[in-house]
Length: 231
Image (cartoon, rainbow, N blue to C red; front, side, top):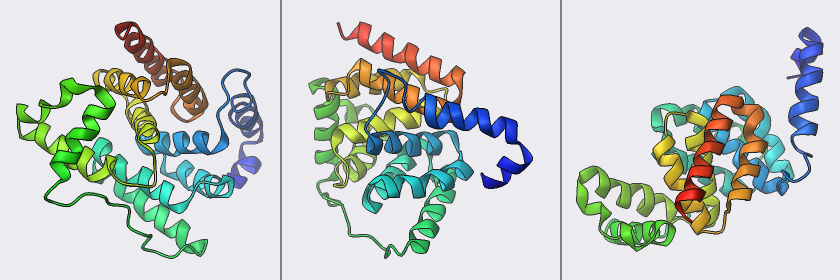
C-alpha cells in the first residue's frame, strides 16, 4: 500500500479517508474493533482479496484478534468457499504468523470425534436455525455432509462463539455474491443468535469498502427480507 501512495496519491488519499476514517467512524454504523476486523477478514476471504488480506491481518492481530480466532475464520471459510479458494489465504496466514513469532501449529480447538460429529453438528444447526433442522440431514448425502462436516467439524470448535461463527458466515456469503438464498437463511440464523438487523447492517457497512456497493446493497436487501419473514 505504501507504493500506491507514490504512484496513485490522489486515489490513495480518497480511499484511505473513506475506508479508514469515514466508514469506520460513521455514526450509528461503528463496530467494536475486534468484531470489525473479524468481519473484514471474513469478507476478504469471501471476495478473494488476498493482497488486502495480507495488509489487514497484521492490523487485526495488533487490534487484539488472537491467532486462534484468525485461524478459525480461515478454517470455517473452507465450507463456504472451498479449499481451492482458501488455500492461498491459509498459506498467507501461516507466513504472517511465522514472521510475527507465532508458533505453529496452534492449540487444537476440535470438540467432536468421527463418532459424534453428525450428532453435534445437527444440534448446532438446531441451535442456530430452530428445531425444523433436526431432520434436515436426512434429505440426502449433501445435507448429511453439511451437518457432519460444516457444522459438526467446524461450528462446534472452540475459539469463536456460535454468534461470531454465524457473523463470519454471513460475510463469506455476502462477499462472494450469488448466494442470496443462503444469505437470507444465515441472516435469520444471525438474528436467532442475537446478531439483529441493525448489527448486520453495521457489518455490511464496515465491509463495503472491500466488496463495493452492488454486493453490499444486495446483502442489505437479504437482511431486510430475512427480518420481514421473521415477523
